Length: 273
Image (tube, rainbow, N blue to C red):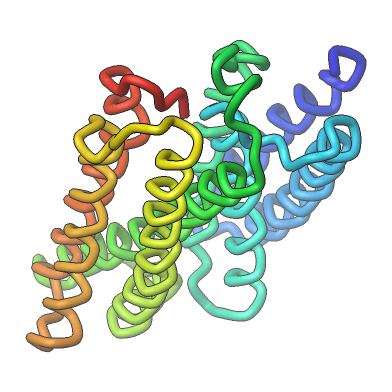
């Protein structure tokens, strides 16, 4: 794919310029900068989708077998959903906060080794069940990321209101009720996706590895993440909690997710992603 690298590099550059436009809008309440950033981000989405589809047709499968390919997919999902949410809602600053994370993921993918795959994976792991296990996991990661962004925005707006700070652009954060609702919505999507991913992963491990992997570092941290988000849903819907406490639980669960994604695989015996 070396001949197509220019598409990726241009995409990252345009992505950075788009974020700059959103940052100017955030500081100055500049609607022209917001519109420019929105349409530039739309171009980024088109280029990123094109690059992704080229890889799909080249390898005849969705490229998610390495953790960095997975980050690319999560970044694409973040851009897609942030554009849709920005189009249909009044939460203008969500696009800015969400795509800071998306840009970081794109940058990590850009500066990583493209084909960082274990020979063990390429020879024994590319079954349909294995592929679906990873796909569900990355979709869950995307949902939890969006949930985190809404929770973070809730926390920021809550503190602004609590401390009676003057901010003319406060309304562009969206209402606290809406931020809380959307944060819970994406968590409700992410939990079953992660649960299905875990179930399929355990089934696959029994078929392909022929030994129990319940105490593998990646499996254990994934279960901890699942429990944390289930705890969030319990506090939200069973105990009817809301407000700053709920946002902090969500943020803490996302930090556990980051540990699961970036650190636990270093201690895993067979997980490369």
